[in-house]
Length: 241
Image (cartoon, rainbow, N blue to C red; front, side, top):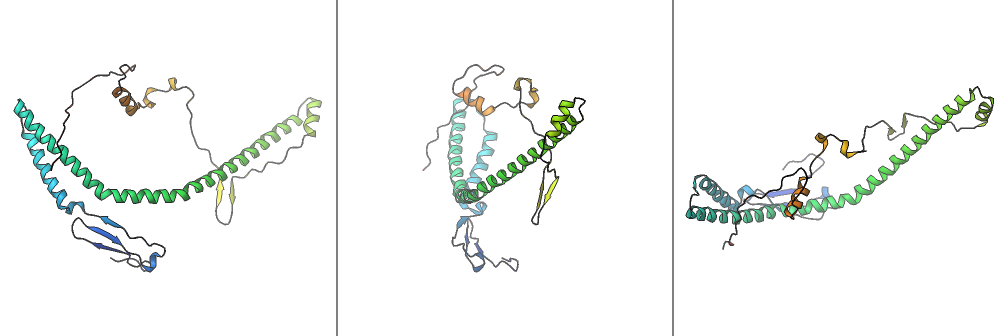
């Protein structure tokens, strides 16, 4: 395997069908002292290949079988039972390949979260402080404008009181520049719901999962929703030897 000049080869792949990958530590990966064995190429796995052939056979048979009698229903039930066992076998194989990878992904994500989460909190704190300071400066600017307007009042008393007020000078800047970066603010459109009943239906989304859970739990009446029953086939497959 070729890498660029700054990174030496650090992974060896042994492809033997239903294979494993071994990552080896080298001098360019100092601090990395873990090796991982990961199964790859499920398409080369003989067990999966056998299951695929069986599924294709069952698929063809499902299209040709006629269920018009008890015997026909029995034949369909036999195949459904076989399919149930194949589903179980496939899921086991899928987890065999993906389980270690998913566990590793979770570990990696959890590790990085211990860094990214406080980083995001620090980022948010500084942004909120910048916005609070900017808001204060805008308020000072508004107050200064009101005081200046009051000074021009036709009422001598109001003009006199305004002249006696001292308003700190507002520091208004569009952007702040530093040696490592700059910052500024801009208006971003957001929204909040004031009266959900007035929101057009096209913007409302039904919580299908919640409704389904309530219906299955026995709720019989939900305004605007028809609750009904329909037949579904239930198969109890015997474990294959």
